[in-house]
Image (cartoon, rainbow, N blue to C red; front, side, top):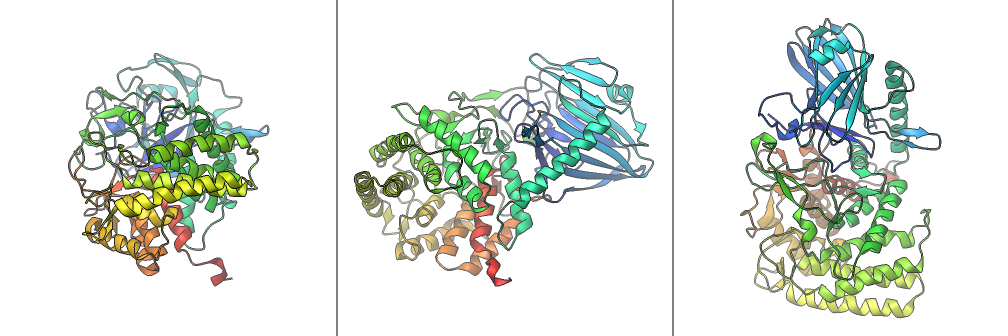
Length: 594
């Protein structure tokens, strides 16, 4: 049965998910949002085993252990059974070469015996066209080609090709290596290549982690979250996807199966905050450049809330009928209808993220007046629509309201433009945006406050609760000690919290009432509690969230508050950024120990 007990490897171009038994169960090897090369996480067309995966199967398998090499994205899995034990080291090469980052669309697997006389079977079954196309296979002297309709993969190995091709069980009496990637000849032998690439990849990640500005506490958790966040970066453009998967349900048989292999603009504020707090400046600047490209591409109509990693606008949603879905819980979707939706919070989200570029002296790319003018266009749009109905940040498909969260982000857009203008010495523009922000603030305070419930609610003149209003203090609309905000935190906790976890909202949506907690909302709760001075409670909840991570320290989108099981797409950028931001806010200062 599929689970989210998965490790992630990648190099900011290629990626793969690997289960506890060392099976590659998901990989869109050509591009994050491409047709998957390995798809068994979402089942197989026939419902049988093995298709769409890359397994090192140990005869008599009994148990396994899995871990990352410290401060790296290199994953080590040990399989133990009655015939012996083997160790699998998985990574995607990433290191500096010839003055630039080398990140080929390749996966490398190194397998060695560590005890006994282990017998293994190599099952390499890539598939194309969402599992419907079986590749044509040709064999060379040291490689196997898998020829698909639009691409060809080459496996170069020093394992017996006959055994690999025939999936024949054999004694693993020496280390073997597998390099899977484009149909290209290696510059040197496969063993030398794999060993050299492993050493250099480990060195790269350790040096990258060494440069992070870490909080005193929870450093291992923060490093793992930071690496995972970077692995969701498509470095060629700077885009950061919401997750590496599609169609992992938000809860069992819920039908809430979405394709998250795209870039949501509302992630910008939280991702930039996380990267900045860690001093991951290179990754942050690359993402800021992607945001700048988004801004420059906006037409006069509206800014769509989600883009492809190459700024693709058309993300037409369709159902894949060849795969049954995670644990058979379809549908499997590719594309996302949200690109067609009107979500007014996007303007503030982009400006909140982009504001960093005007104040950060570390950045290499110069900021011009033209960029500020482009952001002002977003601000004018935000002010125009702040009190108009939209689908909201939860992307409701069947209704529109004047969502408080959207108005809040419109206020943030105007507020940050005022700050940027003041920084640039544009006094007149600063006053203009300050007045716009004041207008929106008055409307929010008047119309989003529900006197009967004594809290801010999810929409103007509404009555239902929504965890997104916890962002009121985080973005600065009200100070955290404002009695209305404190009351809002209390009411939302009493209604939407279940133990340490936080649900998104109480009102039913297109699929009914949600039953799982949304991890990002839990981190918003943590931030709100810390801001109002309830530090110990916030720390307790944060520690509880750390226990929700899987065995290698990763989080998905959702968690079942009863069973603790992870649900939703994986690994989730929102969740990992929330973990980083929570740790930075709650950690004791370095000055307390040195």
